[in-house]
Image (tube, one colour):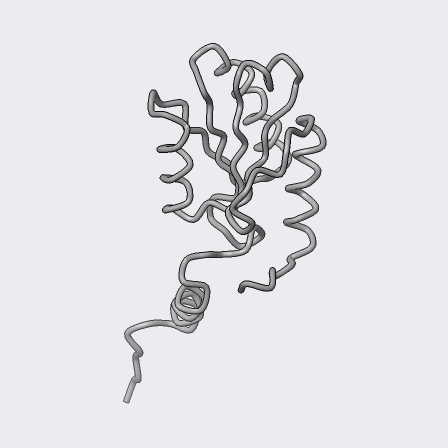
Length: 134
């Protein structure tokens, strides 16, 4: 007799992880680790450069360059449980920087240079740290 389970062990493990974290995966495990949010069309070329730098570093990143207001973009990213958001406006583009917002801390962590922000994300991923609220 051949026994066949409806789900394999990998599928069961994935289901347990999703149930345990409730979709709020830590950065290293999240399917989308960073979302870039632009404030206007003028900063899209700069945001594309930040996107390319993150992608080249192995970060799972997406960009929201739509016409919605910033609050709506942040709400959407939080609803979709993206761990980190990089907000880019004219000021940030002029300073070669991004405003970093963390879903876990639910606040802006300040304006950081692009290199510093990428380094922050890479160290967060490499540490495989689970914050206290997990």
